[in-house]
Length: 259
Image 1 (cartoon, rainbow, N blue to C red):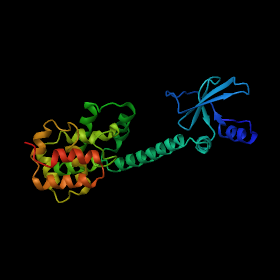
Image 2 (image 1 turned 135 degrees about the vertical axis):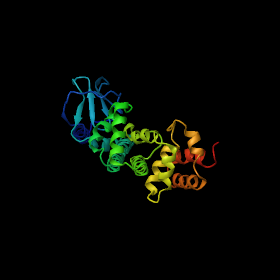
Image 3 (image 1 turned 30 degrees about the vertical axis):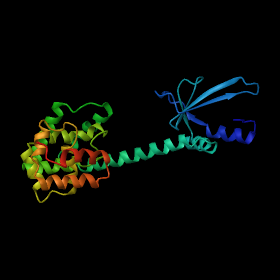
């Protein structure tokens, strides 16, 4: 692209203005590579855009934070490269959705567990599974707050049905109530789902639990114990969810009895 026009060169310069060198370097290769040449064809510089937010230039000790990354993304869009701004907006949308899902997940956390929220959410940052000690502490607190097993299971189903609601590809911390449900006797789970207090949100947790990947030690046998009306109810919920993965799993597990 010819930047001999002073106005065009100034627009690009403004779009590439940086505000700081914070000392970090992104681990990825970047999204857009800018190569700047002089009039004779000699290469003057190579600058790489990362995530619509930072620039990398070999003369800098770290990546530089753009003063306004959207200006550069809009400049690229205006010059026939809409991909970077589309990718950026999609990332922002995913981030907003993730924030809302985590807020809903925290709101559904059973009473008495709030003090452990930080430890549980930290699992998603490290990618670690919950430790036996954490699961034991959660179990003890649940028994203290909900002595009645039906109320305890309803609280767990409500919690597990919140957040992203996905059966796969969800944040690690969302799997904690599923781990706890996996320890619940199937008789208690069935009693909770038959309770008049069971609502759509509890069905959401039950579907996610019963049709997920290896969620119970004897999952096949346990699902086979579901009464047909309950099986139909949970399958209908999965079909209404709009989640094709969940619906497919539910159809495989719930559409017909699995002996």
